[in-house]
Image 1: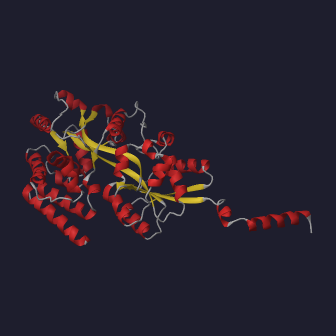
Image 2: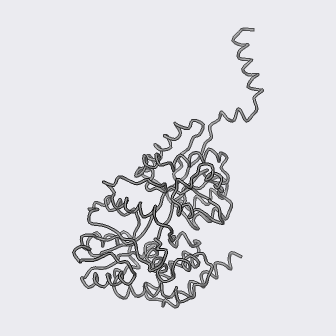
Length: 418
């Protein structure tokens, strides 16, 4: 027997004596990461994952883009147990359907292990919670309010409103100059929804607004009637564009770009969008919408990563999540693979995106927020919310009828859930 063969045989014997766990420890833990993003962003995400994989040789995160009907395809795959290990999601009931189905992992232990409470913005962590537990890791934060043409604003001598009455007075002045105060598009529902949500925050206040969206109280009440009355009044006063129920959100924005409208109710992404569309960002600004309530809450929402319960390498997946939300990673990939952040102290280049930096400070300092209806409400109720706001907008029903109709939608939803 040769010396080489004896050595080879000895190695085989030693390997056979090792416990299976020791052999598995040498294997690479693969993590499939799904998201809805497409275009050139896929290449940026590939680069980010490659960075992680090179510095974490025992883990391999695989990019699995799912552009298209993402939410529907994701639910089918995750509920079947064949979906990704980690996936991008939004907040509220968009994440709630996975939580209620026990399809995602409770991440409390990882929040404690990695001390994510100190890294992430508090209200964003709260937005990932349900039943007192954390079910996701926020990676982005977005706030929404009134953006405006600052050059028109200056020419009209306008001042930032601090009360809802002042906002309506501003609308009157702007309208008297032949300019549409607020451009909004009704097609698909989401753009008009943001304004209607704001009316609910004004008319109901924080607690009642939250209770309504949580389906804890009746919608057939004066405060709801008032919210829909504001929509009817703003429409009647011409403070919204003619024919806006059949207008696209992009067309509504164009009215502002053309100087035909002063404001839009949009999100923190607007500055980057303005630049991408070829307009001068120096001609735009925003203000935080007044609600006449304490605490002053803004319309805001997170995007988060959730871990599937079926994930076979949960600790490895958590290691990737921890790496992604670190300030160093966030700063390196902000604006490419990552379009926003939920990590404290991270912001884009103030020389390039000063208004976005201004928003970042607000999102870090704000104590409380309210989510948009399409995240706060179950999908079946969201459809009713859109139908009712459209009916009020075109004058098909009265605000009183709107409040009653929403309650019918909710009663029917609850009956089907039993």
